[in-house]
Image (tube, rainbow over the protein chains, first blue to last red):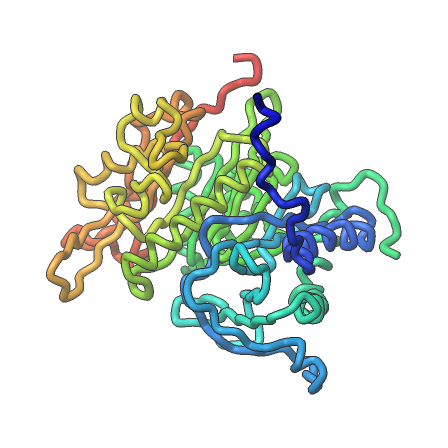
Length: 180
Length: 262
């Protein structure tokens, strides 16, 4: 009887050409762990709500944006609330998995790009409430996201956080490996 | 806060046998507090964060291997409490967004995000033995603290002991919020502005407890302090003496932490 019911599905489904941003972020967890001898890594979590209420739009990256890069990175305005919020934390496994928030990435379910990064901007003035100002930057492509993440990971403030957790972790780890 | 007030704080801690003290927006000399207490024979340790972000200070009679930082964000700092022979505990010391800078809708959205951060932290720490304590900058009855996707705080123990509620197909775990009871008296914070609705007295300083810990919490011992020894923390009109001490009155809560084999 079932032989007479045809399979209506096509043989192939189109797969997205680009990696989901979360895959790109999760791969960086192992890279950071390897570089710090397991002292610092990241946790990447999808959350229902944004950590940030205010949408301050300001590009504060220190690197010079060349014309070629400008083609890859295009500031995109989101039409409404993004669907996914992907939050990255720095984690110190030897300190009972101590964690502190690093940045938020947001994107729609499909397509994955454009994405928007929101992070604290230490170069700005504190708000009257004593809060760090937030910066947001968007990119339309996976290549653009790679460039932005590289810049974000290299910022002084990120490096200082990693250094602080690395240093504090030394007290918790029984054997103290060399950093390099 | 001058030396006189640090001595007063030391007296508060010693007289009330405080095991863990949490301060927001504190400006006192932390070393002076520790040394003043030490001179009185009361050993108190400062629990330092590796990445301080919130400005919240935590002191304890327990050293760093018992009170361990597990997270720091702009509006809270969290500690794992692991007293030998007792069950572990997660304390989240919070100082949420002020009404001076955020409207109700802002507070609601930010509290939803805070609630999600707590759930994720509980997951990372594999615990549901969680206490939130601090300046919520909202009263216990406000939507952000009561809504299921907010802190889901309820004033009734038997409801909180149901552990969670289902709303629109999703489960949300309760917090028991005994701070409702404090509304019977004046409150912890007085604020007067020219708004059509004005509570004036507010209970912004609260403690919220996950169901797993309810039986370890002593309702009778939750109180707002208005005096330390012979010193009044309020002015003659009953409002907090913010010029001499603080614009918030201190909150004292007691948890009798269960032993491992209980």
